[in-house]
Length: 534
Image 1 (cartoon, helix red, strand yellow):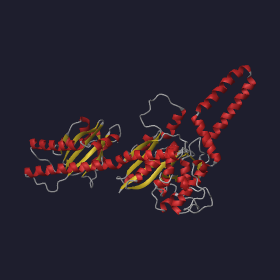
Image 2: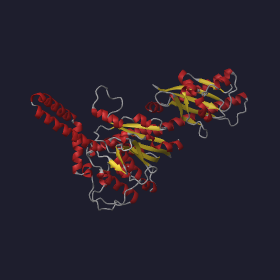
Image 3: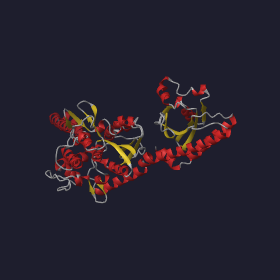
């Protein structure tokens, strides 16, 4: 069963899209080895980690959400019944806190009101300082005082997160302990219950550093407390104090914490990572031009996605488009259903196909072509009277690592299972596969050509790569393939038995294997589309 780590980005109310992504992932036969999240993503990650299914989080069939499982009756310990279901975010937060959220949302949607008041004050005070200096000065002092109080309140946050903490902890207790009441569920409690590892990211504003809450770093911290620290959006929610430190929204430091499982992936290189990003509009749809303070604030919170994903191996990122506001928690069941359904369908078509179907298709094609080429070589050896028992043939597809094309990785392959150079990354400027990429023409190199053979990975910085190369490698055939417009790869075929044919026979043999490679890989219509999206 394929092992996967699930990463959920912070997105405020737009985090509803994560439920659709989780539904899509849950339908596959996958072994989810861990969850990580920031802000709204931390909520979904924590609930999924504790054992909640996608259907329990949101059900079209019953019309119920996870809030219907949350009981606002503080004395009810029975996990099987709900006496006073929360049903809506307004009920969860309470009237006073919900009123504050609505006020903040109102002002964020109407920033012009703030500008109007500020400019009106300036327009009144400046002439008044000359005509009526005392009243004008008094008005200025009053307005500055109001502005100072407002700034102080915003800096401290307006909305308490205690109701959210209580609610999340109750939901976690239901899964971990089978009761609504009891001590808070900690990270060590999740581990003891056999739950997949959970990692929650928040910004430690006391120490000015990134904090990753997990069983390794904070075993005795309540999971619900860590989640609240991660969702404390500056100016909206009050910072959370845990121990001696204060915490704010994890989006300030890492809104898409794909890197949090680096240690685990370093050991298990076969594990995949599904990273779910969420935005209001798809990339590339903007026409550019104007910017606002709101867009600058969103960039501060959500704009470091490229850095958060950089260097994460076997990563499949998917960006969902959820066009609601950051604080639109009360959009209603029908709009929520639409968001969840659209996100699920999008991930079915894109995320799952690229993460699961594409590797299967490409590896199957690699195996098919490798077998055919091996048979051709075997026939040629027989015809030439060569002894060839036990010779080995491998095939791989090399793809660029990152947009700058500095390295090529053998991403898909056949025949590499027990060898150290499986999925190796090779420098474009100092490798045979890189030379074929740059020159865009087929290249054959034999170990018998010692001078040319020695040019590959010859720099001092290639020492560790040289250790990984298959020791019995005798020849390499590199074939550039145009998989789709703008999507090029290099298919590399190699073996451990020298091709000791005369020049004409060798060229005919290489031409035949090149033709097979081009025919098979250029005919992969589904693979072309998926690789182009990759």
